[in-house]
Structures are given as structure tokens and as C-alpha cells.
Length: 461
Image (cartoon, rainbow, N blue to C red; front, side):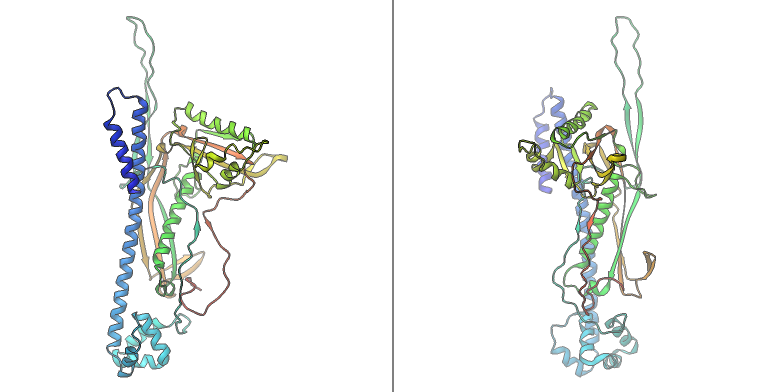
């Protein structure tokens, strides 16, 4: 992505260098468009760097924890009986406190192990080590041998990668906007000028806090041979991104959510007039004509829609066996608009009334990205804790008492559209037969197989 940015910046520099004094509006506009692309790429790169920094920080914390465990291992093993020291010498593969505790339990049992540690370090240390070696049900820990990790299937964000990102580190930002311009009139010699008054308003960006929280057992985190912390926190960050994306597309009824979305910002909303190739082509032409009539450039414009709609159009044939939309869709465009697929848009919206009532509607949202604004505080805060308690689904969860680790992540963002003319919504009816609600993740049926090993479930009882 950095290479792409460098190439794009090179193109801008070359265009500016070759710009003549009598340059056309199209030449200047091309430079403006590419400059906006550069800004969008810079924002995406900055966000990715932020995620990388968070991951590095988490790994550093985990490395420090591992160092502390090795130190504990050395302290304990250096103060035990000769009998135990010989056992440890014969098992050089042991590393860390957890492995040592497991070794003690297997070789000597709970009572004898507790007495050995108490002889060398005292009763308090023995109680601490043995408590760490036993689960909440007071059964010996059986290490879990994990192989790889299967990630969750989720949607991908489509709004943020296309919109302009404006930093809002102070919480609010106001952008003046001209909504009505001056006028010019013809006049004869000596006639009075006809005055006109332009009108201005503002676009205001505020902070809306977006949060996420999750938790797993310490066994699940500590016994894994992979970086589960990275997997879990990355998924948490992805869930925040998808919630943001859906809100920017369709809006949210939450009290503290942003008030602007593409669906309610569009100045023009159309309903499809047919589902054959002629009707569909006419509807797409109407949208494009409306935007261009409103002086919105469709160069670099995008269309957000459900995958099922685009897939159905790709396979729509005429009576002569011709697929009019297939080639363009396979190249990533629809009527000149770049396709941005997201499964978060539904295909089962209610349509028609009475005898024609159905649930086969799906919105296509056409937009010019340079008029879409995301205000981002860039204050991602990832925190973790093994102490305290919280409520999950009405149940009291005790982090410390149940040997859990909890993570929480937060950021503050807002969304705005510079001109409502830059967004058009086409509510399609019957363009696809896969009529389902929008979704952000595919929840697989639970695998009911069990294991007696600790650290396999990853969740509290």
C-alpha cells in the first residue's frame, strides 16, 4: 500500500510539473482527484500502522509475562529438595511456571508437591503455586496441544477505505459550507448591478464513542502455542470496524451513535422499475444522470451493495443468451461505478403492498467518495485486565475469581456527507432471489465434541 501511495504521489507530482498556465478544468480536476486518493491512502496506512503498534505493544506485554514466569521457575526450582531437583534436571524441556506446576502434580500429586514447595519457600508460596496449578474445579491441569487457529468468517469494511478521513483529536470539528451561490445578470450601460447573497452553513463533526469488549479463560490464552492474544484483539478491532461500517451505511438507533448515514443523507432515492435487463439498465442510467445533473462527478464514484445483487446481475441473460452486465461486473464495475460488496446490506427489505407485498428488496447506494467524511479521533485504546468483574447478558462475570482475561477497545468517530447530491439510493426489487438479512459474521454451528484438557474451551462455564 505504501508503494501504491508513492506511485500515486509520483503521478500527482508529474501532472503538476507538466501543468501549463492555460490548463483545462479537467486537468486540474484530475490532480484534485488523485490528491484526494493520496489522502485516503495515507489515512488507511495510518490506521494500519496504529493496529500494528497495538499488536507490538500486546506482544511486549506477553513477552514480559513469559520472562516473569521463567524467573518464577528458577526461584522455585532453586529452592527445592534434591529429589525434585534431579527430576527437573532429567526433564530439560520444562519451561515456565505452568509447565513446572503440571510436572509437580503429575510426579508427586497435590499434597506431596505442596509440602515440597513449603519446605523450600514457605506455606504461602506453596498455596500460590498449587492454586495456579489447579482449575476452578480443583482438578489437575491437563495441557492442551493446539494446532493452528481457525479464524472467524466476517464481512469487510467498505466505507472507510473510500471516504476522506479527517483527524478530530479535540473532539469536534466544524467545516463551513456554501450551500447557495451568487448569481450574475446581463445589464446595459449605466444600469444598476443586481446584488445576490450567497448562503453558508456548517458541517459539524463530533465524538461518538464506539466500544467493544471480550474475554477468555487464562488457560486458553496461556497454553496456546500460537498468539491467541493477537487473534482475539484483532477480531475485536474488526468488529468495531464493521459496526462503524454498518452505521455509516444504514444508520443506527443507538442513542450515542452518529446521526448521519448514507441511506438518510441521499438527496434522491429511486425504486427500481423492473428486473429484466432493459428495466435494470434504465434504472442505472437514471441514477447516473441524476448525479451528473446535480454536478456530481461520477469519475471515481462507487456503488455499495449486497454480493447477491451483483452476482445476480452478472448472471442475468437476455432472451438471446447475452449477458449484458457480466463483463463489466467481473472487472469490478457497474455502469462505471466501482463495486464495493458488503454482506451487511440486506436483500430482504419489504416491498410492495397488498397482493404484491414481498421481502425481496435490497438497496444499492451510489456515492462520490470525495464528498464522504469520517472524523476520527485516532485514539484507539486497547486495555486488558485479569481483575474485577462485569455483567455479560445479565450474568455476573468475575474475572479474577474465574481465571479470565478481558480486553476492551474504544475509539471516537463521526460521519458526514458534504453534499446530499453526492449520494443516490436505488432500492432494487426482485433483482436477487437470495432474500436474507444483512450479516457481519458467519456463526458456525457449535462443534459438540469435548475434551478433558484445560485451555480448550476459551470461555467460562
